[in-house]
View 1 (tube, helix red, strand yellow):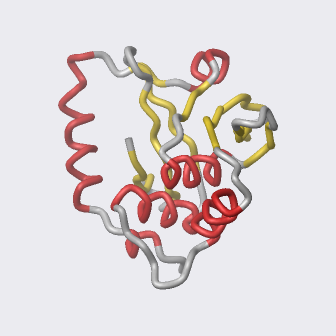
View 2 (cartoon, helix red, strand yellow; view 1 turned 90 degrees about the vertical axis):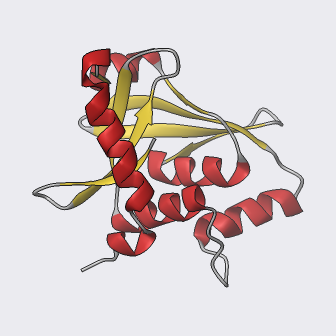
View 3 (tube, helix red, strand yellow; view 1 turned 60 degrees about the vertical axis):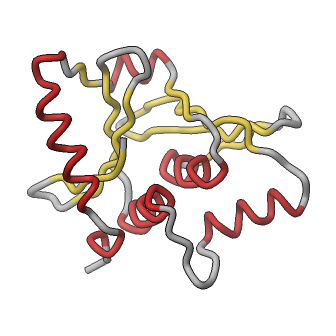
Length: 149
């Protein structure tokens, strides 16, 4: 769904939504990763490639395709992810980096049932107006809102 800033801690969060369900997965991330995700969502291309843009360019140069990202685990409050390539190779990654790369490559993002069971937040239909307010917020946010202090 996008990135928001959690108050009062001023900590960025990426919010993923379950397809065909009513659960949302909030993952706390750093400001740099929040900016990278927001850039990708808004289709912004920096004049020079940022790290995730560079990684995408390298993948293309060596003929590797990122087929999916998996949010695989949650241990001691830390989320874990994997990058899955067409060659069958799987690489461990931070979820924030994996999501930023998936957005740039158009790769799907999957959350394991265990992670969704442990950390997913169900938002029933009657609370959908709150979700709509969040969507409106995302439409108005810019990457500059995540600058480091």
